[in-house]
Image (cartoon, rainbow, N blue to C red; front, side, top):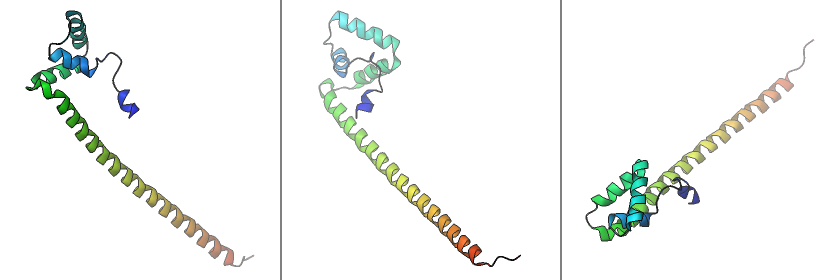
Length: 118
């Protein structure tokens, strides 16, 4: 979970700041600073545009919570599938290695049983 927080840089404003901007709850200085960051970073600009498109501004937190829940659910499914696939691959490698070792042992026994001809 801590890895997910390291994806964005320190220059990204907090979610609360973005919500306050959309709801017009920022001071003039804070609004100006956020608009400068929006001009520099397309990611922030897209986030604000998306927040502005939401009609019911009071339920934004509920939308965010629901989206995060759906995202965790999706990524958990992918992680489980990837883990299962990895186990199957490891089992196959172990079986192939055991078959090769068995063939080598049988070959050694067969060769050692043949009398040496001079």
